Length: 66
Image (cartoon, rainbow, N blue to C red; front, side, top):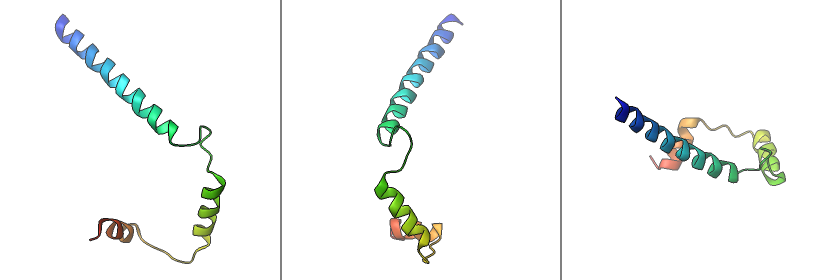
């Protein structure tokens, strides 16, 4: 029973390290404040003004080439 608990504990520690690494990676890829850049804000405004409507399924087909 003690070895099983030790094994579970080791696995939990490994998972915590993995999650921490993933979290750090994700945080580095965006602004620390979670804000959009000026360029991204302009692109978003332009896309919202666009009259073109594309479904999620159509986007998937375009990306996957199906």
